[in-house]
Length: 269
Image (cartoon, rainbow, N blue to C red):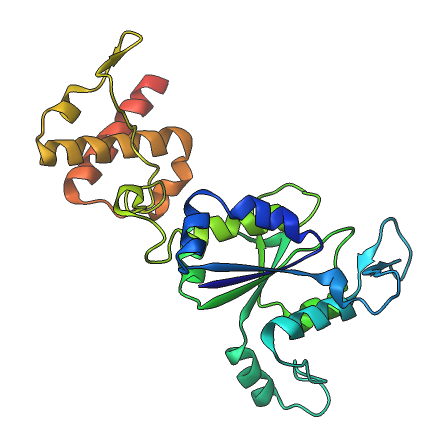
């Protein structure tokens, strides 16, 4: 899978991603991360990529043209006039062009909040392009031309889109076959079945007066699986109860969940 990042700070993205699991996956050719400096496509002699906003206001706005040139360099295509249904292009033609495009993710606080289901969805793509904004934002016209997905990683403001892009690439890449080894398999991680992950333990069996739960030492796989499911339910109910609305439980787990809620309700009375 190929990731392309349009950014003003390529070294930030490169240094953050070329390590650990992702670095190994890049070395193996399973994924690639191509960082492209938007400033390289500025035609201004000082390499300016921003300007004052029309209508006044604080801060600067990233200009459309350098981003458009950067996008064209990545995709090897040109942005035709009226691509989104404007003069000279029919609505059907515009939709046909859009359906063939590589998806472009713009990182913004007003986008859909990123989650594990979105990571799976994006991982099915062969290529993804991330647009990292800065300053007070990006000229709306280029967003209308190239962006297919507006995504946020949370309700807070960061200095730029690089960190959100890195978060998304990390989560998406983990879903790409071959990136994780068997020991690192994501099948039992948090959110994979809609629940938070159960508690984990390793040696020694007793540490600081705290013992590993006996069931994990029993070798009884069915009982261990049941214990893990119940602890996942416990943890989800305690920390992220809203997630339970979308979880499908088997009969035994559903009974445990119902009894857990009844017990908590009784304690609160």
